[in-house]
Length: 365
Image (tube, rainbow, N blue to C red):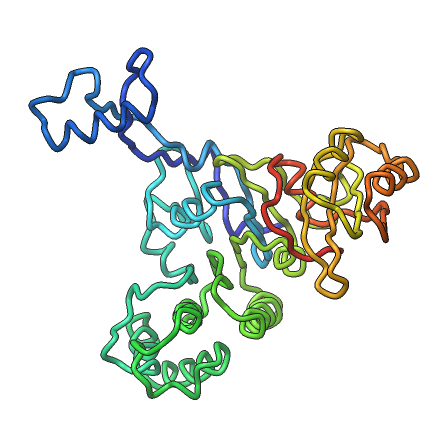
């Protein structure tokens, strides 16, 4: 029988927000201008601009089970609900509706037991750090506050400083750290106590490639694989999720739109993925190309080695017209064209489901 590390049932989180009521033919911008002006001069604010309270649903009736010892990823764009979900599971936020159990404990009824069951690594910031203390003593302080005896706290602090690459700066004031080093310190704080569940909210944001890879290796092989810790990772880095995770949930507007292993998600993609690279692939030409062959853009960028632009395109179903496509591009003035059908990656899966064009490149193949 598979043991459950985390279980969510109909989990929902709504936030209050202020919004102006309908104002006939007035534009949204006009309503806000009048509303703000009314705050400055309340006596001149007409009734029609008085704000109403509405709800923003960040997590929407979410059902999810994560097994003990699983490495699980939550993928989604900004505002998809990833961080809100993590905060509810860590008891930082209370659910509006539904239930969730972490390590067998109810997040609303057993929040102290939940907090003792989880370690949380979040993106940067100085929350919880004393800028007057050295980096080493900041970590030792948090280790002892978290219940470690002084000897164990000293040992764990040394291990964590090595992991995050801050041993050489251990005696310096934490106020001198750069943004990337702040994130390393935040990661170190989250990893001090060995809890059965580790929640990581975009932990590699702001880290250089070397530090990011070291953190991934440690969590995958020493924390998850070595100690059997359940890991929940939120990220927008598709390669990171593909390399690390047993299963992935893709969120959009607070709902899970896909769930499965990276291999299964890529296998089940119904679109054909086309890779094209060449000289002269201008934005205007590619727009005409997409319209002509009924394909959608998934990603694009510049090949640093050759100086040529590349595009990943999606064709619905199995439609792939290689020769007509190459001929069209050549006639339109493009040259040195490479055009082929390629296996999908997680970014292809994500773009197919969410349906938004990539704004930046990434890796070409």
